[in-house]
Length: 364
Image (spheres, rainbow, N blue to C red):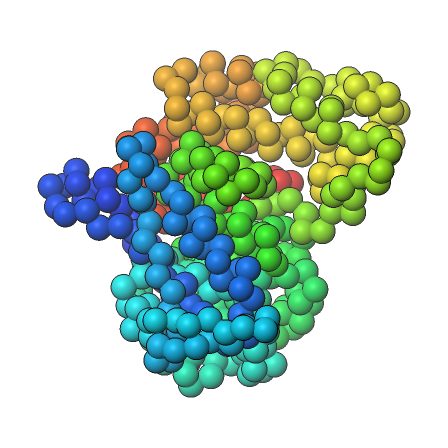
């Protein structure tokens, strides 16, 4: 059984309904809980989407959990089960479906095919529904045919097996998540947080996503193209790090920063600094600086009336043309198009820019 390929659909938000004079209808996120699930990953959508609020503290999403069968207990990889009160019919009400990881996927993992129960459950999903997977939940999307001809990712330890089992998708084992518009996949465990925050940012802008991150006490933004596995995420005791240089650079993004200046902040040679930086951040200093400048540009385009030229200067791109090239490469949109999308308060499409078609590569 292969699901119809999702088509672009408009976002459903409370503010959009109110603007049209209709009763508010929250964007509904339905989480599909499968036997063998990881409790941590099951809780990510509720924690991230459930905490998203607009400027007057109204919720922006409704999160519902369902089973692939009738309501009842769903086993986990821990020493307890989870009681799920909704059956697969809830999938028919979803604007976004999230499929967390499971360690009991059976033929989905072993043969690349859906079980009859899972296939029947997914039949409830409406065309146009945004589909999201966390970790090995990507196996379900691939088995349903939703990743055919698309880029994807999964937990790095399963990437080679995933690619062999599903040759019609292009697997990138080196990124945290891949956004292909209406189908999004993430790497393992905590990368699900990054992807869900990315979705909130895509739907409602940087300010709301950052507020959710603050309340969750997680980094507000880790780009999808950041490496899944960073060699030295926590420095060894008493060992020099590049953290001070990163902090120093963030306060000077508007300046033409040089690699040697950052290295000098840590009293390192350029070669040592570059190696240490890549070990700690998962990317080169140049890639990191570009990422930070893009993030700063997004914030200014969303929240200020600065001209495109002023935004480019404040972010360190120098010229509007340079910033346009970087945003086009990273987000697939121009600065003006990005601003138009986010300055129309909460009325943007779920699969429209920014984010639609973004393959989350910091090497662009």
